[in-house]
Structure formats: C-alpha cells, structure tokens
Amino acid sequence: MEYRRLPKTGERISIVGVGTSGVCQSSDQEIQATAELAIENGINYFDMAAADFSPFAPFGRAAAGRREQIYFQVHFGANYQGGTYGWTLHTETIKRSVEQQLRALQTDYIDFGFIHCIDEMADLEKAIAGGTLAYMEQLKAEGTIRHIGLSTHTPEVARRMAETGLLDMLMFSINPGYDYRRGDYAIGGTDERMELYRLCEAKGIGISVMKAFAGGQLLDARTSPFGKALSEYQCIQYALDKPGVITVLPGVRNRTDLKRILGFFTASEEERDYSVLGSFAPQDTDGICVYCNHCKPCPKGLDVGLINKYYDLSRAGDVLARDHYLHLEKKASVCIGCGHCDRRCPFHVRQTARMQEIAAYFGV
Image (cartoon, rainbow, N blue to C red; front, side, top):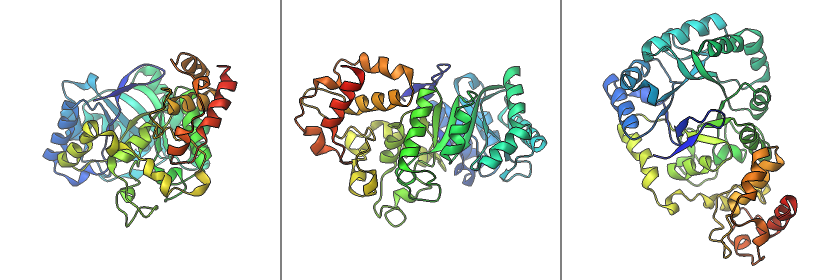
C-alpha cells in the first residue's frame, strides 16, 4: 500500500480507499469480510455514504480492536433512519442519523465529518443558516469530529467552502469524463476544475475522489462519453495525478471487486498510463498539462510533469510550491529545447516553450 499525508495534520492515508455504495448488494458476512480484507491490505480510509444502512455494523465489527488504524468518512446529511439512504438538510434529523451511524460503527468519534452532497449554493447556505455547520464545529471542538469536510460535484460550492478555512478534506468527483465536460456531473469547465484542484493543494485541503469511473460508464465503450473504454487502473492513476488528491475511493461490491482494485499496486506503468485520452479528449482541452508524465524520459532528466505542477500551484497561490520547485535537482532552465516532450505530449502542450516560461517565472 502507498500512503499520502493529510497536509494540515499529517495523517497517513492510503491512496486507494473503499466506497460503500456498491457493497450493500452483498450479505452481512461478505460486507464484513470485504472490510477486513481491505484493512489487511493496508487500506485505512472508508467512505460511509452507502446506498442503505447495511454496511455500518459489518464495518464496525471489522474495525473493532484496530479503530485507531483506520479513518471513517461520515456524512452529515445522509439519513439512514428508515434503513435506506435519504438526503436531508434538517439539522435535528442529521443529529439522529449520525448518532445511529456511530452506534453501528461501534465508535464514539468521527475521523472526517462531511457536509453531505451539497451541489447548489442555495443548499450550502441552508446548511450554514440551518445550523448543520455550527453543529459540526461544536462536535469538532468537543473531539467527536477530528476533521471537517464537504462532498460536492460543483467547483463553485467547493471553492466557497475552501475559502472559509474550515475544510481539511474535500470529496469531489474526478475523472476524465467530468474534467472534459462529459457526463451528468461534469460541472464546471476544464480550467475551472483544474483550478479547484490547485486551490485545494495551495490551502492544504486534501481531496478524496468519488466517481473515479463515472459510475462505471468510463469502463465500457458503449457508455463511455469518449466512445472508448478506459480501465479502472487508468482512471485511478488519472485521479491520483491531480493536485491535492490524497485518496481515490472506488466502490466495491465484494472481495472479488476489491482484489481486482488492489491489482493497481502491481500493475505496470503501461497499464496505468492514461495518455490515450489525448486521442479522444475534446480539442479545446489541447495545451493543458495534466501531469500524466507521458513525456518521459526527458533526455536531460527533467521531471516535466512535476515542474509544470509546481508552476501551476505557485501561480494558484501555493506558497510552498516555489520552495518545492527550487529544491528540484533539475529545473526548467536545464531544458535544451530538443522537442522530445512536445512530440510525445498527448495533449499537445508545447512543453519546450513552457520550460522557458517556467524558468523565467522562478528565475532559474
């Protein structure tokens, strides 16, 4: 397993976690076995926005005796009091549902408490004015919530909450379809979405990724908005390469699905490589570096993707990005303009010109 640290507080979080939307299809025994297999393989981050209440007790049993080793992402606004999933902004209903979830999980604290599924600015205002956010802040002050987060598909809503300084984690839908304006939740343009990822990294807000496969649509040529299928591993790597991303949370139905997802860690670079996107992504996305590193190897040893990322982050306001860049062994000024990266870039970025621009920006 590989881990990334939460920027503000340093928790080590597995780069692949588990979403529970699909596991509801399995038996109680299989749900617990799936959770246990995940923990045994080093997965320590679990999103509990499930389709119904069935995963909570099995996940609670799986966590028993090792609760401090794992992180639960619990949603304030997901209501399971009737057994099935419901969405609510009513604070008293939220309180009762969260208490129910804590009992089933056999825990008295929440690692990541999320304002749940806020896609409209009006709903965010209701969550604030109605007392949900204040209630969560109270629980954080008492130690019941360790971190406050938000789940949304809308960049504008995410930016609004990011600017408050309250967020430690954002749950956001990241996949090539949505980033290139294809699909039901493709909210915001390519530039707007990329700016959000950079803003999160600049402000030390981690991103947990939902819908990495666009609900499975990207995995089948018949439903892919590009007319061609991508693999699970390509989609996971795509999300992990975005600034700010800490963990990707694919939904699994059972141990079979989980074992296949875990294959990501033994997959070859070729199996993870998503540069094929350059052949069918919209033309108006040309010239945007997505840090895919398909330009490697650089004849002079430059890490072109990382150089681009630090440049974009610095321009987005990340004060640490400049220092990270300056500590690179080889900087943009080393570029000899040979054109190797230009020829290999699937997104038609003129990287040799970018290297000159970046060297001028940083002064080296």
